[in-house]
Amino acid sequence: MPARVPMIEAYNNLLKLESFISATQQFEALVVYLASQGACLEQHGNIEQYLQTAGNELLRRLLQGHLDHRATHERPRQSVTGADGIRRTYCRQSVPRRLATVFGEVTVTRHAYQKRGHHSLYPMDQELNLSADKYSDGLRQRVAIESSKSSFDETVRSIAFNTGGAVPKRQSMQLVTKAAIDFEAFYQTRADQKESTSNLLVITTDAKGIVMHKEDLRETTKQAAAKQQHKLKSRLSPGEKANRKRMARVASVYTTPCFERTPEQIIRSNKAHNVKRPSITNKRIWASVERSSEQVIQEAMEEAIRRDPDQQRDWVVLVDGETSQLASIEAELKAQSLGATVIVDFIHVLEYLWKAARCFYSLDTDEIEQWVKGRGLKILQGKCVDVAAGMRRRATVEGLSQDRRKAVDTCANYLQKYRDHLKYDRYLEKGYPIATGVIEGACRHLINDRLGITGARWRLSSAEAILKIRSIRSSGDFEAYWEFHKKNERVRNHTSLYAKSQLLEAA
Image (cartoon, rainbow, N blue to C red):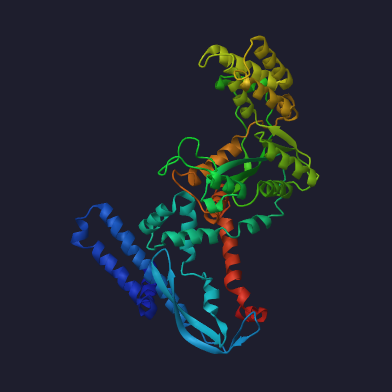
């Protein structure tokens, strides 16, 4: 019983504070209802729903009480000097502004310091780090997270259902764009992220298309779309779905131990004998539909340099063989005098082999599978040129027509073209990865799962913002990013408006 005395005294003192009277009344009403006979007849789900609504109202009143309490203790100043050097000497007291929070809407009352012909300054807004618009930090964070997971319509419904706040769709789109504004700056501050490890440093990139509004397509795609003639008015016919997408470049940088394997282990179908792969660590993934492919690739190299500035580790660059991508990577490596082993993904090679195999065999037969396995094994043994020559000879011997042997020639050309990046025997001996599973998964997760929603067409600013927030969350950096973002918001919205001497005085 004695331990409860301080709590009772604190509660009684709280009752005496005028700012919190409304909150204590709401709390007492909650207790009275929960102890009532009517509440005891309700199912627990109904009680939960009641508490969620009434509890949000209690928290809203507590927040309002806190803000009112702070307002009563804000003392007028003689003047406040802005960054423009102008002293605001007129103090207008008790100026209200609305604030939409996760508990509901509250009113912030504070002093305004004014000078005719100049904007007003609100020191209390700086102390509270209020946003320029009406939405609280909590709501902004919820919008960023929810909209990165599902549609904006679903975000609106989720916030309305799970909180006491409300954010319309258009405002949600604006808030997520503002929330992503510090993405580049956040990662640029990590210049001292050198990793103390000898493990491999892997860089990998890919691209994925996003369906956009016509005005936000890249110029060449927009021109092609403008020339396109549609056969039907109400829908697209087969073959008319091109020229609707803008390519987003996806990149990832991660650390992994060397993992030596043999070609036989790779090609073996019995997974029970496969050795467990080592774990990937410190993986960062991101994507951009706004910036060029070259810019994203440059960012990937800069991220790798931050982790290994002296290039003391083995660098591996994994690609899928797309020509422009490979050219950009090689140009960036040369421009920055970086040494790296560029590897073309083995899974893409297998896809070409399967297409070539259909020129010789029927589908779903043991012969076609054995042929692909056999050629795949030889390629893993470093004999891609021999495989290319062999399939060409067979197509000639069997008298396949130009049309029939097209997939054979395509595969052979691919193996010849990228032979310098298909030295899998050496890569396996060194324990290098040879498949782009990480970046393939990143494309599905960052783009398909959110921006690839059926029927969605994106504006550039919204698509870019969603990609940034999803990238931050996927990399496990959201909490650190949000703290960084709030500090920058404070500078943008408040401290940049005051004279330095005034900030020191306020501190």
